[in-house]
Length: 440
Ligand code: 4AD
Ligand code: MG
Image (tube, rainbow, N blue to C red; front, side, top):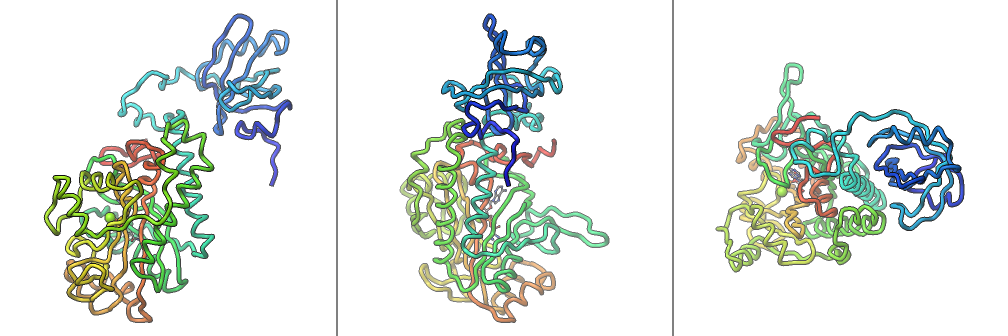
């Protein structure tokens, strides 16, 4: 499909031609008889110049009225100009005002985060937000590309669900006619259904957790991609995870160089992210933490300081596997030993794998091998005080051709935060939802 519509990001294809930019005023200044206008059109920024004589008298008059974020259509000739933001500059012939903007609340001066969050609907126009959300879009595209190229079927899971996947402590519930429905915490149980029907699938959608924690890594609504593969064990799962991450990182580096520059992201830290990634057991992770003076006792979950400390040990993301089963969800296959292939029933260890990103971005992947034995799974469901009836459809998978299978969930926002170097996940999704944030 071709389109004659001009966008700033395609300037190099229009060198020397007369084009029309439809966009918004980013910045303007006058210097004697020359007027400079920087416009953005959503795809990039471009400097344009109005010269007396080259540009209509009326356009000159219009220029004076322009305020920040006024919408305009400017027509003129494009020429290479290395000092212009996108490398091209326009010699304006005519300028048409679409709307003169009211005084814009977001100025180049510093604003507090609370104010910016209230103005999120406008804040997304700012350069850093724009760049981060373009990287997000590319990451999502590259995830779909990765799975599509490997023959995975996209298998959509419901958002309104009858039963929890990740425990009952972070459930949002809502009335569903005369029943109670829960907003999905994870599409995993449905992804497992898909794996048995299609061999390898991925669920991709929003997930919800009533997280009361106010950290830079937690949202109450976030996006997860959840692949699930039949006849796959824990090691297969880690291999799939690391090749997905490598694909995402290398794609963003090659396709989003401009955005990473705006974000001042140190590229060298990302360039070395190639599979394989280091793998350490939970037991060995504890030893590392002990040496660093922030030991935890066996059976405790890692918190943010532990994840950061483990991330610092390696230049690449690191897998932590074989966690204590007591801190993991009901569906994990278990083992008595680290490195065991899964001894059902008595295992101290869950066949899980979490991937910790460098630089304090924390866990970006959580997953593992699933319990595939019907009796053990039934036992676990009741151990976790969940209602067996709610899971009858899920336990059917263990009655009709049960096989070893594995999968994981990759959190999109934490991945975007790590890739962009943005400090807080609230800047990695257009409209973040957090403990005290429901607007806009
Ligand atoms: O480790 P989690 O809880 O794993 C699951 O939900 C599995 N059922 C997934 C699966 O095996 N199919 O969550 C997976 C990932 C985490 O590693 C993290 O990246 C992200 O989801 N995540 C969050 N991201 C933002 N805000 C939150 N509150 C998040 N909770 C989890
Ligand atoms: Mg997890």
